[in-house]
Length: 361
Image 1 (tube, rainbow, N blue to C red):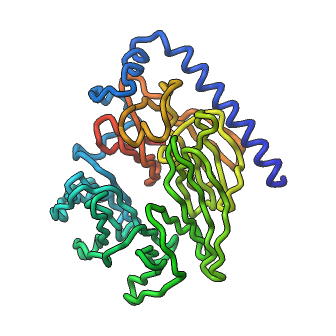
Image 2: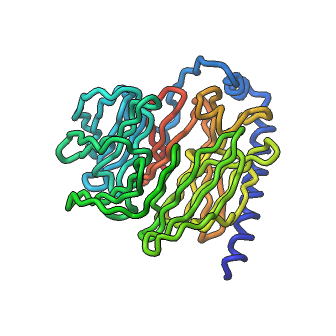
């Protein structure tokens, strides 16, 4: 089967998924469950209580979570709260607070390829500061000042960072830094998607356009791959050489499967945020809102927490060319963000109560 035949089949499958979602919407729209879910609308700050009733779903921890990551070396989950406290949940479900250093105004964390380290950005946006947390030493190590963006290598202990003068790579083993190119840019994202390719993207919103460039780390040639897309936001998955993209066309949001050359392999018949998806082992997992309404400004409203969703979970098998719903919660509302696979469970943060859950597959 050629790649184009495969992508045509994927597009057909995604259309079927969209039909399934529409049927589920019609079926649920008059029920009390749907009425309670749809009341979580734009501008409403109060979030509904969640009650665990489904044995497929488990609460990993009662801790309030800013974000989390998985350490593949010791098979543990690490949780960070909004003040910087870090909790380790070991494979035997033992909970241990391993660091209590306060970080002011945490904005984002980036785990390394194996989860042994993370980079955190805090003091944001007034004076963005970057530091590395090492799960072995359980301590923080500050990075140089004037850093604008960082990205971990996809399969090594190297960290790329852009400061106010150049793009550089720091080797955490040798502690040596090498300059890649001279570069001056504000407010960008870096994604190191393969050994030789790094993506550089501006930050978009519904009101502003964004673009993505590909940097060949060997030749140091920069190529434009996506230009001036409204509301552009992406999430990349280096193990698959693919990503999930959200963009707006005439104020209408569209979610697509894309590759690292910027080609759109399929445009989904449903709309969801890239952070609600995961690509792993030739499967796409997505949490798809049941209560997405016209008038929401995406991605802005979602990331500003001006709107919350109630999701159903779907999977698309890219090899078998099949798609299916894997979970549609009944008595619980889930707004799933940051999906990760651990064993046979799909982990995610529930934005409705800021706690970490696991969905057994």
